[in-house]
Length: 72
Image (cartoon, rainbow, N blue to C red; front, top):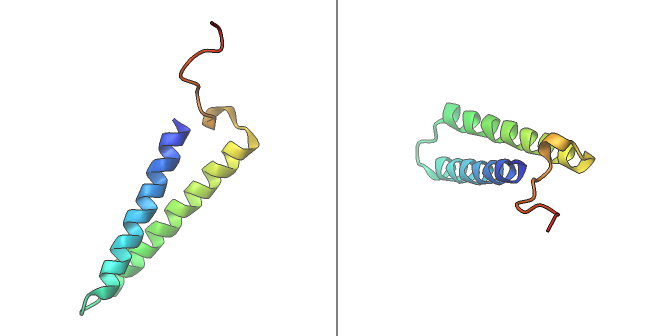
């Protein structure tokens, strides 16, 4: 589950960055929307860094689950 969660966070970050770039390219930039998107991007990046730190520390709840068992 953690791998899927990390992948989804990476995809969200990428989509938000694309929205920020399209918002910057507009002729009439909506400052409120741009600041909102930047805040959301930072929140998602913070969550991603927290989860990756927990996984690096070996938190059992965030480790990947093997598809096949080790027994044959």
